[in-house]
Image (cartoon, rainbow, N blue to C red; front, side, top):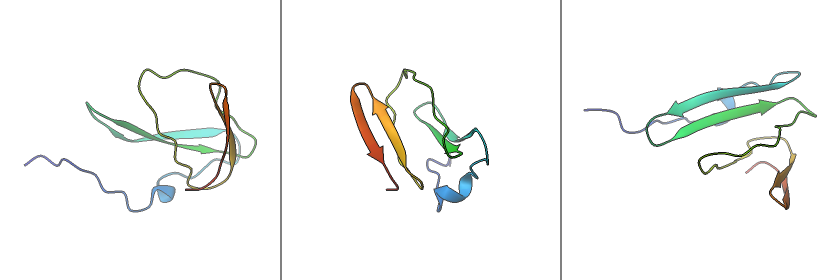
Length: 78
């Protein structure tokens, strides 16, 4: 029987943000979903871009100012 799920008990333990720069790690990729963790050093940013598929952002730690289109959001854990 093919495994149809993946359990990750603690996402924060799956990535160690760098002291400088940005780190990304794909934790799941199949025909239906791609899940990527990002770790950012303080002061780093992700450049403006568009995505071909819907995205969900969930912040595990830290704080960020997020701009989505014309909306600006103060993000924090949870």
